Image (cartoon, rainbow, N blue to C red; front, side, top):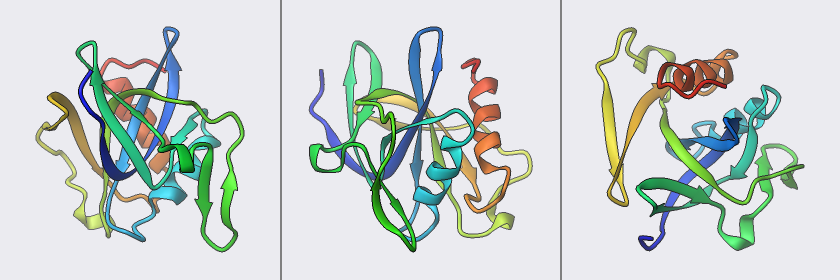
Length: 149
């Protein structure tokens, strides 16, 4: 197992074939990462981490979990930091979702991209997090990668 690295990101997951597979949501502060994660919870996702994710490799796969002090918590802008029901302790990271600041920043037909974290290569997709369909797009992205949900 490689040593964990902290990423400024959120992590949400859905269950597939008995395994929780996740989307690592990255972007600049205030971009809407927590808001996107919160809306994704209403579409069958579960929270793993909000704001900070400890990413680590084990068994040839990339995983993520919340730092102890943030486990089970999510920021709800205008309300504060609240507990998230049924948060998961960790999950495999299947995809990285990069939050962009404007809808026109998302390419219509993007070329495949990846990023290597802790020695593991993960597909990367841009998404405007404030779009109403953004959580459903994450579902479709994961399905297109062979992660049926």
